[in-house]
Image (tube, rainbow, N blue to C red; front, side):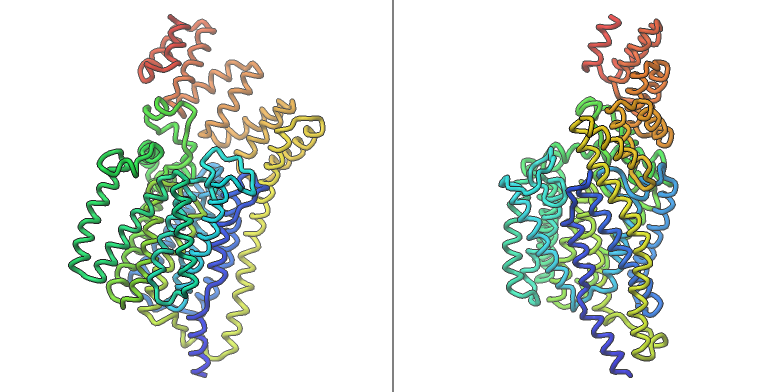
Length: 617
């Protein structure tokens, strides 16, 4: 009986977590060209299904298995649990709640995404250990090979998909050159560090070298600084710690020099110092506006935040006046471009603080492992931490994209899992729970049933997301080609979107625009008015309502809506100019002059000021 039990433990230790590894790779590589949002929504569906399947594993194993753990591990689990509790609270408080759960349009960083990322991290701590951690390296190398190869195809103009892409051609499978270069930087770090691992077969090392070369070319040709910055910091970290492992005196010098390189790198990003030509780019420095707006949102609503993934609906209200004057009144941002600030701004102090604690806990656990173990194990852990550092570096200046984040959370779980299994000698089966082989069989039978139970609602919701994405894709296709037959199809798809319960409100707004295009003005007006009444912070809905009120010649309603816009977008000189015109047409010159003075107060060199002077003199 004892032999069977020991065999069971060993088989669990050496088993490769195939579903986890393949699932994570699929999330990064997956997209659907028949979706309105072919990247983010497709990845949300995959991670939602994967997360719920793995949740069945965690719940079933909790009953039969236990891990004797150190305080750092238990603290991490507590932080993750509380992170989800407070995030759920902020999600329930978010209006509309559907955005809180699914995430904003073209982002999808809602509760569902983060909950599944947490499941992936916790599951990774359970299944990743010293005997199978190489599978994480292998998966990273192969995923990077596919991503970088596809990126090179795009660079050479041979993409098999005709993307509607306003960016650099190198978007790979993430839909944006910044995201693609950042992901390839993480993979490059993992690939390069794998070359020093004794247990990695030579064939994988050869692929890693080829992958690193292709990824480097793709990163450079993407013209995105995010990948270079993430790779720069991760390599500096790896070299500094590796030097310290080999020779403490030499390592101390390298760490000291690395600190100054880090300072110069930060200065370079801010267009100062000798590294500015390498690291500075306007799209990097503009992050300051996004960060400060996020901090203002946090000050405005410190406990719940402005709403999960609702940064975009509040950005214009909290942005600095310099931003619209420099970049234009209509230019906006839907994310703080800093994961930490984003979480504080949209979900409040508890979610933001717990996220920091999760990050710090993983880092501390990883560093302690490097300090206490043998040289070969240190190299394995150092590669994981360095790739994880690359993820954290890009998260300081970028959006928490699901295709990238899933690797950050997998690496974090792998760091903790490797540390646990090495220190604790594997998952320990509870002696009083398992007394014979038959009970082990029951465990195996119970897990798929439980995972299937969790999958049912996940699949049902995913089907709804799938339908809304494909319906809007078809709607936009027919809207681009107006004809009598198209009108019928537009009417069908628009009604289908409006009647759906699990759909992004912005998709309903696009459906309303389509109704207007085919002459159903009243229907478009009713839908837009309802949407704005449900989401009074959405400027797109408000602008659409203003356009419709103008069309219906409801000028009193237009005036009221534009006054409301001054609250949501206080630094929009064009809106004040339109108010000036309305007041002048009404004969209210006093208020018209007030609008002119407001324009002069913050936009004295704008076209709006010139037009205001032409109108009033």
